[in-house]
Amino acid sequence: MEQPSALEARTYGNLIGGEWRAARGGDTFDSLNPARRSEVLGHFARGSTLDIEDAVSAAVAAQPGWQRTPMPLRAEVLARAGRLLEERKEELGRLMTREMGKVLTEALGDVQEGIDMAKYMAGQGRMPVGEVVPSELRDKRCFAERVPIGVVGCITPWNFPMAIPCWKLMPALLAGNAVVFKPAEDTPLVAIRLAEILVEAGLPPGVLNLVTGLGDEAGAALVSHPRVRAVSFTGSMEVGNQIAATCGKLGKRVSLELGGKNAMLVAADADLELAVDGALWGGFGTTGQRCTATSRLIVDRQVLGDFQERLLDRVGRLRLGDGLDPATDVGPVINSKQLRRIHSYTEVGKQESARLLTGGEVAEEGELSLGNFYRPTLFTDVRPEMRIAQEEIFGPTVSVLPAEDLADAVRIANGTRYGLSLAVYTRDLSRAFWAVDRLESGIVYVNAPTIGAEIQLPFGGVKGTGNGHREAGTTALDEFTEWKTVYIDYSGRLQRAQIDTGQG
Image (cartoon, rainbow, N blue to C red; front, side, top):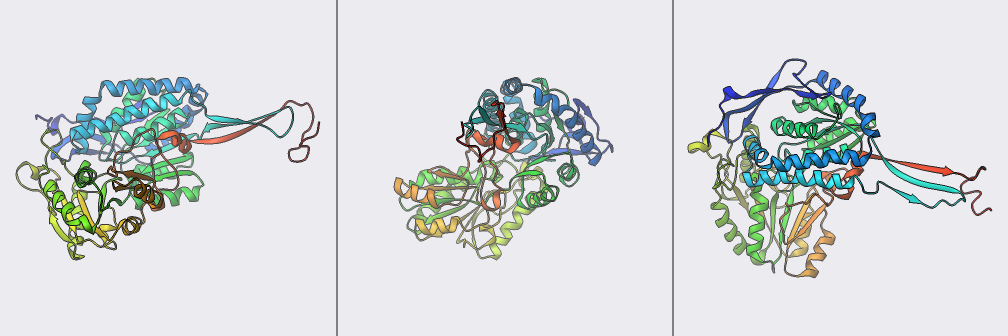
């Protein structure tokens, strides 16, 4: 697999008002291939408060004209973008693997999710966006309709560099908003390719603006900007809470998706082979770098030994490597900082007296030493109160916890501050529904891992995972619209609601 050298790396600017510009301060940062740290994919504008100001000004100027564009015409732009994404799926998938590290099959799935979201939201362009209701008074009509918020800021993570931006950008644009988009600093090139496609699809200048840079610089400036009326953020709980505090002080709309400590419950009657398949995919897919990753396995003691033995065998056979290699099962961790963080949790687990079954170290042999590779890690004898069972590690680390029965498993599963995705494996339909009713999470799977959300359904969590908003599905527009209620009285006389009701 021949790769471009660092000398061939291009310099990329910010998209502001339909033009690609260097950062006002002239500073740049690099995007590296996590499987091969010496490979520089590009040099990117390090946006600052000045660049955010320019981007917001461009969005403010463009938004009224975009709002006046009929929604079916706005939807046509998204439909064209979806077709362009489809045409370039292989190219974008390979780029994503080089920039983010996930294996190519998963990267192609990430792009497909963006395609699906573009098509889905394009279809929403001719669907109802309000409701007509009867008035209590004669000769009077009442209806409510969705209207755009105005200028919105979208801040996205690196683990799904196409899917999550599409979750945010497609409904925000369809609703008639102008957007300032700040992608994660680890995956700016995938974001630029997405922005280029939306522009090519016919998006007017200034409706979408993209500023690359660091979170505490460009991201913070976007959140606090007074003319940005809403912020949509996906990322860590710590950063999300800071954003919520800022938006609360400024009185602006904010939607948050802040990760999870997701669990799979394995009942005594579960199909163990199916459960092991789910645990392997849910725990180690995307190298565990998913907000929905199956990081806890809560297993009935009756089947714990059998389940654990089968899982350990499968984990031991996972192959680390470059995601472009078809033989690779698990790709690299996104960057060196995260690599150190993951290993620090291995040390925490050992200190807490959890038993390390496999993994727990940085892979440094051969070509693996050139990238950020961590061995798939499995802990057992884990207690619910341990940090490795409570805190989001965001890496290929999975903990096995014993449960006395399904009720005990549900209690353990609910015992964290997160509430994104939970799963239960059982052959008994009544037990499955019993668990579904009691599990505290925004998403519940039965006989499937905690990953695998589809774009036609709401996505989001409860408790510390989110603040009530949902992305995707029929609720996607909730995040990016306001409701306007309209009363039309054609009676020709004063009618007083609640007072003149029923009069002729």
